[in-house]
Structure formats: structure tokens, C-alpha cells
Length: 221
Image (cartoon, rainbow, N blue to C red; front, top):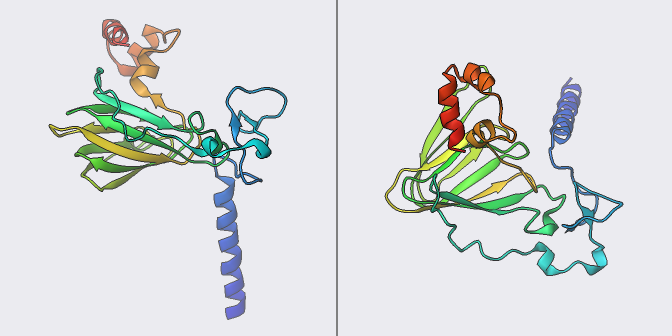
């Protein structure tokens, strides 16, 4: 009986492990690396990029410099994102990971946005941040936390999230994402600044406001 139970547990563990693999978003590489050629030439593509001949790969294909430099936060929202993904480090191609530095001016905001292809794990380097994400329909539960230097917070893949600097000094974070190119959709930009624009009638009904309010919002983007 014990042997049979142990066998069942082993089978269930293997099934769980297999299911976790089938839900991976960036495919696992079948070779040591596939350094992306950022100006593709046909005919072979892996994750949207041609692989560089491994014989001519060099250290700079896996290197980026400058993450110690503050980003320019002199903009409407008071934040700046410095991305380090496959476009900056071609060697990240197929490896399923990337990095960002985010700088916040006092009371600066990284507006509500999503990463359609990656979970984000954020570490506060300096400052104090109010962060949060919203769960999916129908609950739309807001989960928030105040973070200080050294604190870590996770934003699950695809969920709308934000960070707001609540302090009077600058804030800095480093965040890793589980994709070589996780993408970003800033909600306000996408809804009110799409090209061509979404119909005023559609947005007015969706947000239950007058068309004039929609026109005012669109004018900001």
C-alpha cells in the first residue's frame, strides 16, 4: 500500500512539473545561447531574431554598461525606465530574462501598465514607494504595499500594476522580468492615445462619462 501511494505521489509530482513546463512563456533554448542579430537577415529566426554564428560570439554580446546612471525624470509623470532587454543585450535572446532600472522624482509615478509576456520582481535601491497591482475580473482586487530600501515586491504576469514615490527625495529600483522582451502596455496611453484613436462613443460608454470628458483625456496623450 505504501509503495502504491508513493508511486501515485511521484506520478502527480511529475504531472505538476510537466504542467509547469507547458505554461512557460519564453521557450527554453536547446543550445548554450542564441545571440540575436538585431538587424535580421533571412532565413532563420528564433524568437524573432536570427542567431549569430556561435564561432563569432563575443563578450560584448552579453554585456551592458550604464545602469548606474540616473534616468531623466523631467516629464509629466516624473519617472524614467531604463530597459536592459534583448534589444540592449543580444545574448539574452531565448534566455527568458531581462532587467530594468526605474528612477522616480519626488512624487513621481510609473503609471498603471502591464507586461503581457513577463512577471516582474522589483527591489527598492533608494527611497520609499507605494506599489500595487489589480487582480483580474471579476474581483479586480487592489493589492498594495509600502516599500522601503531593500524591500522586494512581485507583479504577476499580465496584471495592471504601478509604483508611486511617496517621498520628498528621489527613488530608484532595479527590477527583473521573466522574459527577454516582456513588453509594456501603459493603460492610459493605450486607451486614450491609440493610433488611430478609439471612437469617443466606445470610450464614453466604457467609462460611463460624457464624450467631452473623453476628448479632454485624449488631448493629454
